Length: 450
Length: 171
Image (cartoon, rainbow over all chains, first blue to last red; front, side, top):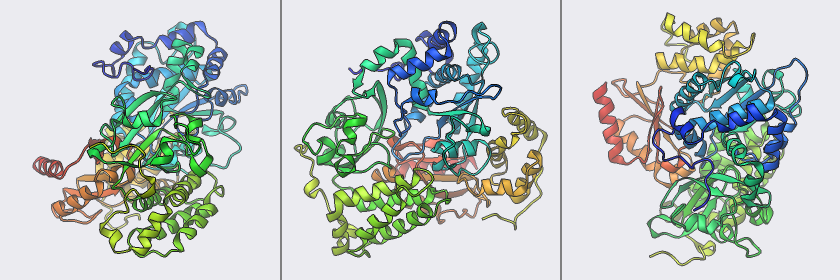
């Protein structure tokens, strides 16, 4: 069995309460940090652990913390990004629903490390039940002296609040999130200045994903060195993977980074194989924004090595033959799924969620949606694929925030790897409305399960 | 689009105002505008949607311009700017849910309720719409119903029928 650091006690009854959470060793990290460590020690420990941002970008968390400006007399903020909206990703919801104190404890330790006296957890508005759960957990933590004035007699004060969003994917982008937290539209800000210099209310701010913050707790408990032993290369520790699509066991799995993709898909410990005895066609490995890969390239790299669930291995081959670990939103497509339809669906999503500030994204996502709509509905042209690639290239890199790239990559990668399926939609317009292109050359190299 | 037609007078009762008072305390002096989104959720939970009159009252409470409220309310998809059914069935229509049958569920809801997306049933009880990913991909197809945003997972046609029936009986 793989080592579990975040979900070890997920099945313990009432682990959502402070009492049971403490029985299982909860809030030890707060005591350790506040009683025995300086804030700098905590930052150093997180740096040493090699923890990389679990929201999608994979930027080293400790390094992000060390960029935080500390001018005299200016408050600093920690904001937790719980605006989980990347299609395919539902791990933060799972963690907050079942072990809310893991996030609260992580927030206390991280706020202490950063010198924040007020911290916010920005939760997507649709997660009202999770907002209630977190608020109850905060009440409990406060009553037990882990939050509020003079925590554990240390003189350190911290107030923690939960802020609901309003239903906007873009607010998962950290500067849009800060705008939203200030009561405005979620329009991303131009960087620099980065939030570490001028973030919430123009004060130095760190924004971290739920899972990153929760991971700080086991890092303190077992020590950075022990944490860094888990995983491979620069992919240390464990990662929550949200598995969905056509698999036998959809759900959230905590993996030790480095598990082979093939094992993750077919082992009963994880996805349990493709549902209904079908064969694997494609995978989106890290949330809808990352390049889609056909079966033959997700299981093995272009060089023929086993593809592993790590930042490096999934990215092996660049965008030509690789993808990204991203948020760990692992979406599996069986042989009956239509890549054109899914690409149209994802592009509609990005068009809907574009904030509209930058013309390439606002207009480009709309054009791509239109072209993909006609391709999917049997009215496309053979020149449409080049047109789509052209539009996607003109969005990519030309916008304030990464939503533009996130919209461009799924389209470009779908055409790169499944061009013949797109062409088939043009040449077999009518047939494509009822039939399916199937597996073709991207066939799952494994024998079908009968 | 903002609705200017159906602007019944709106009264904010004391309990709502006291919730507003609690909210603004979470933010530093002069940053009370941060309370805007949570306040709009409270107003919508009570009245079912955000009328211009209600938004103007929110603006005056926060001492900001009405346009600052309108521009926010129109940006975020959770806020209803027109009256909706008492129960709004919001079905996730994004990729992962579609892989497991969300489009079929939406079609079924449309037939079952007999109204198109965003329309209200004649009895005023129901509306429905497709929404983008709600971070429940492993439990799809999934729908949510405000204002508490309770989830209904692994939807089937029969499950939808039962849900609609139980809400109808509840009235």
